[in-house]
Image (cartoon, rainbow, N blue to C red; front, side, top):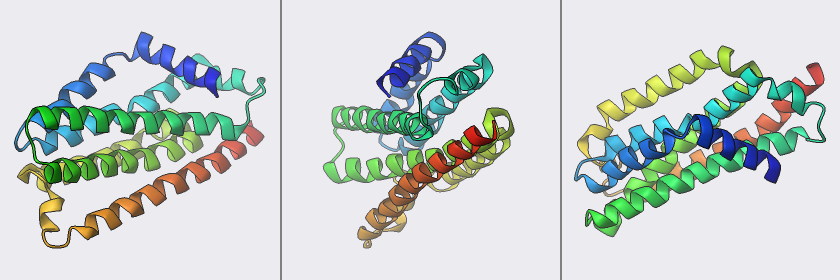
Length: 205
């Protein structure tokens, strides 16, 4: 898995390095600005496509065909992509928290903002990764577009008010943690499903 991770880091730095400053810019804006939650979520959605871009590169360069001749199990290949997605989520948390602290936001506002960011990134990954593995980057593009459109609609209609749906949970703050727990469970379930799908793809290739 270390070799796969090293490969993805090199591809990221050589071909998709613009994602890194965009993540810092948008997620950082969300942390510093008083009502910047929309920008933070937008930055998360934009940067979360990084893993799909890495998978697209593997598909376009023929890496998937080469990998079938290497001692790499489906579990290892899929797990590496999910570990990469976890590192993306961690980077969102670090950037937003640092920016929010610089912006002088109270601890409660930072924590609720992090809930929105983590939930959004988990939703993007739990849909995009299994569908990309099953159908390939080109065929799954429409599905990813629909998921992105739904999240954008959610961001425009709900998050534009600052804390967004978290404001709707005023007095019921425990609900946001229940929802976060639910999306986290679905995220790890998609990990397991992706392994099964990858094994079927390898068997049929």
